[in-house]
Image 1 (tube, helix red, strand yellow):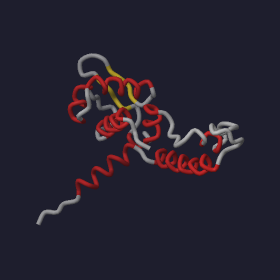
Image 2 (spheres, helix red, strand yellow):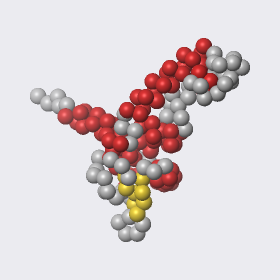
Image 3 (cartoon, rainbow, N blue to C red):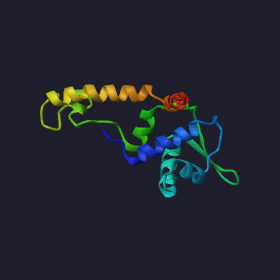
Image 4 (cartoon, rainbow, N blue to C red):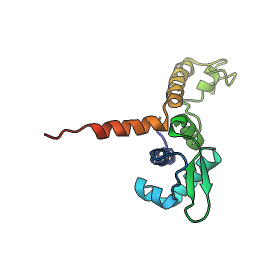
Length: 150
């Protein structure tokens, strides 16, 4: 599984916003500069996150985007599925997980490959549900604490 650049940028923007208190306002230009994201691309991403219920926008002087939820409540799965759609290794997983009656390959029920990769799909989705933007921020803080000075 490889995330799209759009999903990666969405996560990076949310992590940057999550470092501040809920209610802090972020301009597109500042976020783009701090996270090295093209402004026009970031505009599209933030609009999608707003439409997905993760952000709100404020107009006027001092306007920009704000998180609607604390970083502890924004899962990676919410963000990735909002931008890239659901994780699905192969279409046959649909049948293996009971979302379709027949595999794409024609096997009624599900084929062995679909059943096997459905397990992977479930593991990845569960991990992405449990992992939040706050977890990413915590990993940043943990790395900053390490010092090798003599």
